[in-house]
Structures are given as structure tokens and as C-alpha cells.
Length: 191
Image (cartoon, helix red, strand yellow):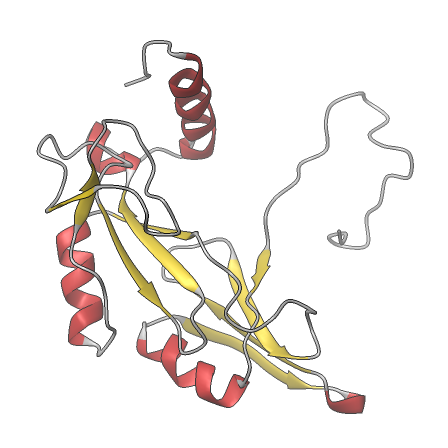
């Protein structure tokens, strides 16, 4: 955890309001940053930084278009084995157009698929029963495509909530949390 603008609150928030916990970065374990950098560049992600430090550490940082979270990889920044990150989710407004764009940039993606059971999430180990093509009702979180980086880190793209509701939604993280909680408890899903 890091602080922003040098602020800190030892012992928690004095107001009793939970502190914001914003996901800032995801570290992706890679074997060779020089091999990974062109791949993430080809995805159209913005290179924010590429630093080398004393003792051989290196950090490359990329941000996907429209994302407030970035990814980092490099040398000596994680003990996780290269290629061990799976189930990294990306959202796109149109799964087929998003897939086509990445394919045109030379990225090998799966075909678009959806889970056999409504509301079921894809199995990252590939043992589920996906159905070829997008979800017939084009529901959010129901159409997917997958790809891997050069080390085998697994990415999953899915169609986004905003397309489902037909407008931008600045509260999408809140909606998503409510959606998942209701889905898991068998309640009526939010619109």
C-alpha cells in the first residue's frame, strides 16, 4: 500500500469512514521484459515508464486505454514464476470489435465465446463448456475472448456493463459489486 501526496492515516480514518482503496497497479510476472514490452505496446497500451534501478531491478509500466489501473513487469519485482498470472480481466464495449482490433495488431486471441450456463464465469483452466459466439442476449459479463502474453500470462476480455445499460456509468465498480453479490445469492440482478 502506498500513500498519495504524502498523506497517511496511521490507525485508520479518524472520521470512521473507510479509506478509499483504489487498485493502482497489477504486477505481471514475466521472464524477459525486453520481449514483453513490444507485446504490450502492440496492444495499444501506453508506456508510462521504463526504469532501471541499481542491482539490476527494472520496472516497465503500461496502461490500457481508458483504464485507471496499470500493469507493471520487469526484473526483480515479483517472486511469482513467469506466466503464472491468469484471469486478468479487461472490459471492452464490443467484444467482437475489440477482438478484431487486437487480432489486426497481431495478437493471437481465442474466438468469442460465452458460458453454457447463464451467469457462469469462464473457467480459467479451460475445463468448462464454453459455447462459440457471443452471448445471444449480449448481456454484460457473458461474452469473452482470451489471449496470453509471451510468457503465458492469461488475459480475458469481456463485454462491458455500460454497453448493457446504454450509457456511461461512473459508478460501474459499485454496480459490478452489487451484481456479483446478487448473482451469488440468487437475488434479482440489477439493471
